[in-house]
Amino acid sequence: MQLPHAKNIIQKTEAFLTSHLRAITFITGSGLVGMWTVIRSLTNGVNFDVVGQIGVTSQWAHGMHNGAQLGATNYLLKMPFYFVVNQLGFLSPHAKLLLLALVFNIATFVLLIVLFEKLLRLYKLTPNNWFYLTMLWLASISGRVYWLDYANSRNLETVGGIWVLYLGLRLLQKPDWRRAVATLGVGGIVFFADQLQLYIIGGGLVLYAGLLWLHRRSKRQFVGSAILGGSIIGGYIVAKILTTIATTLLPVSFLVAPKSPQTLSLHSIEQITLGFGRSTARIFDSSFYSAASAPNMLREFINAVVLVGLVLLAMYLWRQAKQRSLATVCGCCILAAYGAYGVSGQASQPTTERYLIMVPLLLVLLCSSLNGATIRRRLVNIQWALAGILLLSAVLTFGALVVSWPERYSKDAYITNTLTFLQQHNFDVAVSSRNGIPVTYFSNDRTIVVPAICSPDRKLIESDLFFDKAAFATVQKQANLVPIIIPAGGIRSGNTTCTVQDIEAQLGQPSSQLVVPGIGIADLYQPNRIRLAD
Image 1 (cartoon, rainbow, N blue to C red):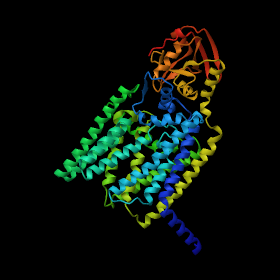
Image 2: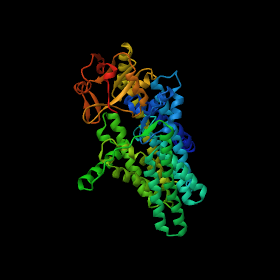
Image 3: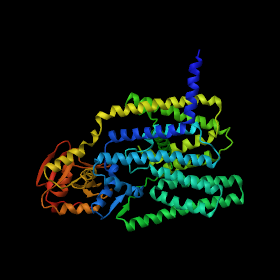
Image 4: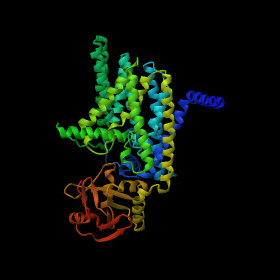
């Protein structure tokens, strides 16, 4: 039997949480995102992709402007922020990378809440407890949804995609030239920064607009859908123009991702379907069947239960919801995401779930839009059960942080070992794999480690991906021997490995050889003998 005093406490607690849930979501969600960012930074290690454009910005600040290759998702618009943080000389390189990641990740979470609220109100829906609880759930799985240890990864770009979604739907509700220009302009900038948003958000909006016109069959709707479609196409054109301007005015080029064409067969359909399932489980942090430890298994099993519960709840509420427009457009964008993922050929490749990054965000918005302004009393218990599950997930996340702390940065020993070796032997320039990019950044560009990759015919070639080509000339300018640092397993690029024997067959016998503790060996060559293909 429940005591009256206990019942009163429960009621007051529930009233407090309900009235302050928005503020709690901002604070607690930001804390969860921050914890995940620290955990990923401590445990994943710094590779050339983590440094990426941040390192290029540092090179540009040191006068290197001969050109670097950036990824298709270029993050150029973030580079001024990278420059500012790079100037904070009192911070270590690890601290700079972590600071950038924390700022971008927390800003992403906060801005998503604000934009989702605007989207709900656009359809006269009031953000309720379910919305804020599902946002907390999104924060709790953010360690898998986002590459949180990468400042130069999709974070603010997802906010840009949701912004385009808001502007597009606002245009569709009341077409006029100002809204069309806003959608076109913002879309152009967002599509320039991240092409994935064109396929998912742009494609989803066009699909929804077409379905809306087919349903209503009115001239007014046709005009609205046509204007929206034209704005999306215009945004694509603006993105292409911005790309041309960037490559003309800045010393950059953009990597063209290799195409993986799909042939329609039972085997390819099976591979794509399996890829959809595998990547969906991973992006929602629900692949408990492959978890490495019991706490992770428990946390990921909880996430799987919540995911299935949210999908079932959405199906239940869909039949009763009076306002389905926002849920429908979210569904169209989710279909566009899986469609683009399947057609690209990435679905049949492992660990490519990053292409589904918008799906968890859109699912949260979809479920929130079906709940509307109020929620049935019989579902309130489920709501607070979700709150309890989120609390348990937060405790497990904090536990993961505590467990990982003693082993922090253990995967970055190669950076310290390489720098120590080069400094002890007074080498200012070296050649190594792409892992030399973080070494260069961590030395504040005082020691240059030129990155090389292994070609299919097992020859070392220069790589300007996330590295300015001006640094390549420093090899030939050296008066003394230049080391080529070769890890114990050779210099690997994908499935190809250049061994010591391959490198010596290409460049000849070295003048001498040294051991690099914890790394491998260093073949020392006269600068004029190091002729790498480009």
